[in-house]
Amino acid sequence: MRRTARTLVTSVALLCAGHAAAEATDAAPDGAALYSSNECADCHERGETRPLGGLAQRYDVERLTRLLQTPPPGMPRFELSDAERHSLAEYLLATFP
Image 1 (cartoon, rainbow, N blue to C red):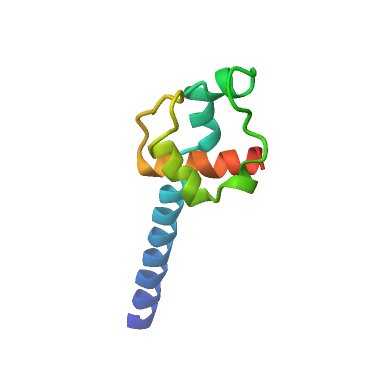
Image 2 (cartoon, rainbow, N blue to C red):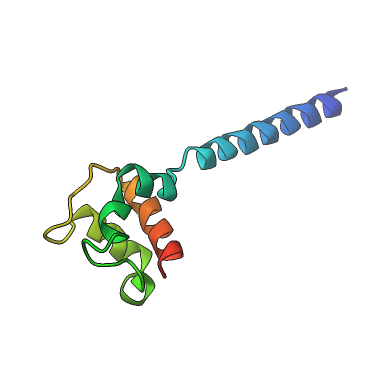
């Protein structure tokens, strides 16, 4: 009986840990949604400013995340969390390599 109870407790603990990990992943910011909601394409895809192609040749994810923290002159600084900047940088590098 004790062994069965111990096995049950262990199983429940593992399920809860897996559920918490899934929730943390689900809560991660979506880079594509950030790109869209901040209207980045309005400038970068319509020729009003520097196109985004070739980003991976100039940046890695950490350098691009820092650039989003302190953008160059002419680019607005959006109020994003560190996690949002990181997710946006990952999206940009995957979409505009």
